[in-house]
Amino acid sequence: MSRSPSAPLALAGGLLLASLVPAVSFFTDSRPFSEIAGGGVHLALYSLTLAAVLALLVAVPRLGALRAADGRRLPEPVLAAALVATALYGATQYVQVFVATFLSETAPAALDVSGGMLMAGMVGSWVVFLVAWVVLGAVALVRRVLPRPTAILLIAGAVAQPVVGPLAALPLGMALVLAARSAATARRDEPSGELVAA
Image (cartoon, rainbow, N blue to C red):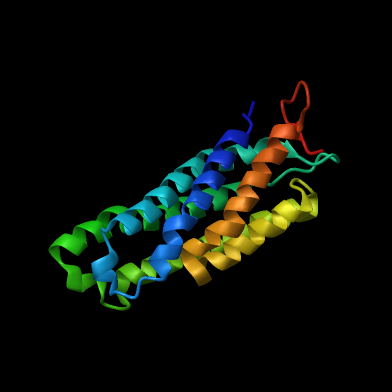
């Protein structure tokens, strides 16, 4: 029996919304990235985001317990794709917290180089995250597994992530908090244990 995704969704959403505070400072800092990386704002921003992603990794498999009133659920391949995409996105946050901080102390010039394999891999991960979560949001919308505003915010947050980076935490964080609320208020169907959307 799948457990409710409510708690990890709420944790992930709350952490993303909390990351908006350092995100604003981060994006208004005009210094080279090598000077920003490893600083307090940088560490706070990406540590919060990494923690949010870890919570989301717990939540994604549990989304399979949600179903619409007509019995439709999120397909397993969609959940699997979202899980892989979230793990890849988490890897980019790990790089920001640990690798960028290390390089800021040992090879700061490397952080100001545009392009390269590392950046290509990170951008690729962001695109995979966008596609997987747009699909998940769209399927949740069509199948009515999540409320319409929640699914739309989820899609908007996924699309915004590669465009505005950490500032996408606003729509994505709100979507996750609303999804947590929806899961918390869903009626549990016995004996299947599935959570039926209101």
